[in-house]
Amino acid sequence: MPRRRDPKEESLAAARCLNPHPEQVTDPEFLSSNFFDARDAVQVKYEMVRKAGAGGVPVTEAAAAFGYSRPAYYAAAAALESSGIEGLVPARPGPRGAHKLTDEICAWAERQLAADPALRPAQLAGPVQDEFGVRAHPRSIERALARYRERHSKSR
Image 1 (cartoon, rainbow, N blue to C red):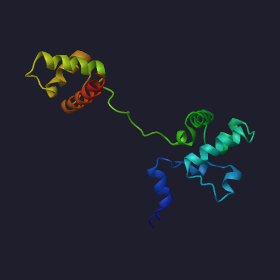
Image 2 (image 1 turned 180 degrees about the vertical axis):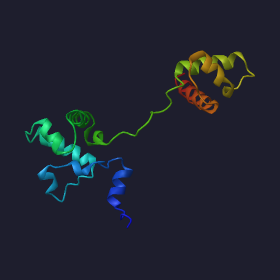
Image 3 (image 1 turned 120 degrees about the vertical axis):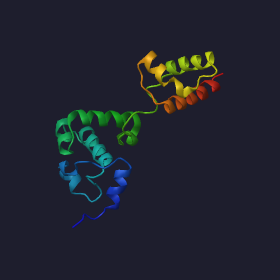
Image 4 (image 1 turned 135 degrees about the vertical axis):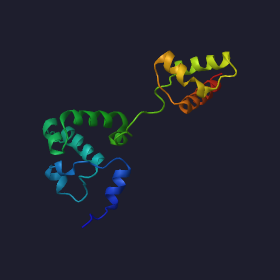
């Protein structure tokens, strides 16, 4: 029989807040309340930090009761301190924007294009790899140069 879809679980997953191991939460106060939900990773982390801080429970004990390690506790406490409750929401995975085609590479590419008006940005994939050892798709080079030009046109 297929498992019934749970709208709250779907919502938590969409918000990147679904606790992958709710069965590891063993804190009796947390589990005895209808208000708390072990599937909500943000709520679990918040209560773990609160219990160790305000509750006077040792960090190791609080982390274990909420299904986390000591390093995970300290990471959650630091995130809560620096960013508030939103700091407990896991970040999106993967790179944050372009990381291969740096400003240095874009500036070099602009000089190449200025020196040879017949040259197109997409034709720079090979030269960029030869010069910097960075493999980039021709379209990625075009997009990076467009972003680079936009950033540098505003600063003038």
